Amino acid sequence: MAVWMIAAGGLVDKAAIDNYSKTLSSPISAARRALIPSSVSLPFGDLYAWGFPDTPKGGNRKKIADIAIGDTCFFCTTDVAGKRTDWKNAYRWVARVSGKIDPEYFSSVSLAFWDSERFLPYLLEKPVPINLSFEEFSRLIDPSGAFYNRSPQGSTKLADPFKLAHLIGHYDSMDSWAENFIQTVLQGSKSFGKGDGKTTTGLPNRSSLEDRAAKFCSVEVRPEQASFRRKLFIAYNGRCVITGCSVVQALDAAHRRGSKWRDGQNDISDGLLMRKDLHALYDAGLLRISDDGYVHMVEGALEHYPELDGVQVACVGQVL
Image 1 (cartoon, rainbow, N blue to C red):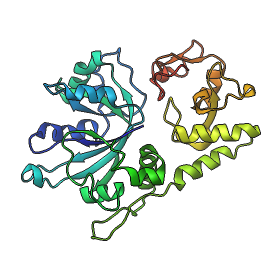
Image 2: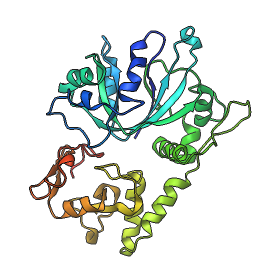
Image 3: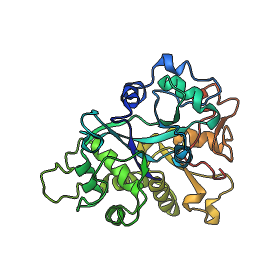
């Protein structure tokens, strides 16, 4: 999974600033949801979203194709005071991508969300409020503060291995760092850099995901299954691939159809992290997942789980 810096408004784009309250700082209203075509599959519960401007040259079309479910987005906003180089802005929210919209519905969904057809929408988990200056964000990436210390020009995926070497050295991947950042913020940590000129990594420690994984693996299972459970838990960041549930006690390590633990098929590619009730339905054939990653609830389960029918899981493109 990747991490993105999202420029969500600025001096020449006041329309984006008007859109914050519509889909980013608060859930999408029932009135707006009612405008979305019925053929568009949406998750149950509160809905959040953002979108790339559909630019004339089409550059953001590549970005909307590239951004993936599970990616983390840091949203940079501004108060539009001063010139472009003097924006008094900061990162205000961080959120994971929870779903994507079929390109066929970009215009109609954009119109429903933001009263304009010019955005390329994607869905988000509930954004977590933060207040992170560019200097603080830069020092999270590297103690030197040499990288990513200015306003992102457009939306950018963090992908330069040289600039990210410090974080990857500590967390193995940007996704692990992002998960720990979010969990630390949710736990009310104040450990991030305060811009006082002192050298500080501002790195949330990795114990959160590791501790939760250890708790998940403490459930009594076959000896060879402990390793399988741990690998799946870490790979999916402790979240159900269908609902995003992160309650440790509610999760199971499910073997994909065709994979058998007795045959030693206990790699990450052999499993899915699922909520316990959905694991039971999956094993019973009442919940199916198509080759392109969509949930299909079979009759008998559909009436009890209608909100999950058609949901796109967080492992699209794999044969499930």
